[in-house]
Amino acid sequence: MSNFKIDPSHSEVSFKVKHLMISTVTGQFGAFDAEMAAEQADFSDAKINFNAEINSISTNNSQRDEHLKSADFFDAAAHPKLEFTSTAFRKTDDNNYQLEGQLSLHGVVKPVVFDVEYAGQMTDPYGNEKHGFEINGKINRKDYDLNWSAVTEAGGIVVSDEVKIAVNAQFVKI
Image 1 (cartoon, rainbow, N blue to C red):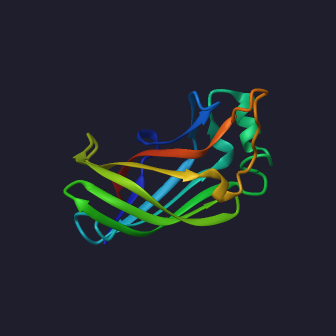
Image 2 (image 1 turned 90 degrees about the vertical axis):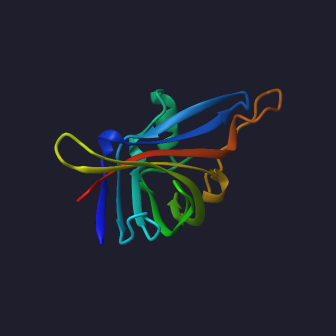
Image 3 (image 1 turned 30 degrees about the vertical axis):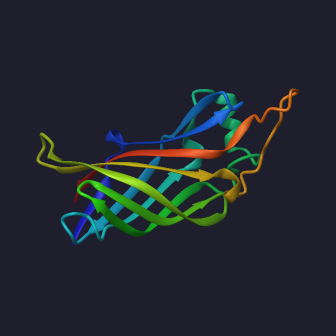
C-alpha cells in the first residue's frame, strides 16, 4: 500500500459560478487537506479523502467572502468544512479517470463524479516522489441547500445554480 498526502503549497482548490449570467466569479479555498492510498501503481484502486475549511474562502472581495461564509450561503459557523470521500477511482484511458464519491457540504451529503487527468510523476530536488492530478466537475449548489438567490430589477438571475469545481493537486508519497 502506498500512501500520499496533498502538498498544499503546490495545489489549489477553486470554484467558478456565473454572476448575472454574463460573467464568472472565481473563488478558492485557502485551507484544505487530502490523503490518498493505493495499492496499484496506476492508482486504479485509490481511496481519497479531502476536506476544505469554509472560512478559508476567498473571491478577492471581502464583502462577498463574508456573505458566502454567512447563513445565506455556506453557514461556516454551523458547517465549517466541505468534505469528500471517494467510493471509486476508475481508469477510463491512459491518463484519465472518473472519481466518484460522497460530497458533504452545508450539512448535505450527495454523490458526485469528477473527471481526473493524471499529469504524471516526478521526484523533487529533495528526493520526494510527487504526482500531479487535475480534477474537474460541477455541482448544483441547490442540491446542498445553498438556496440564496436574488433577481435584478430586470428579472435577471444574480447567481447561477451550477458551480464548477477545479482542483490542481500535487500529492507527495509518504
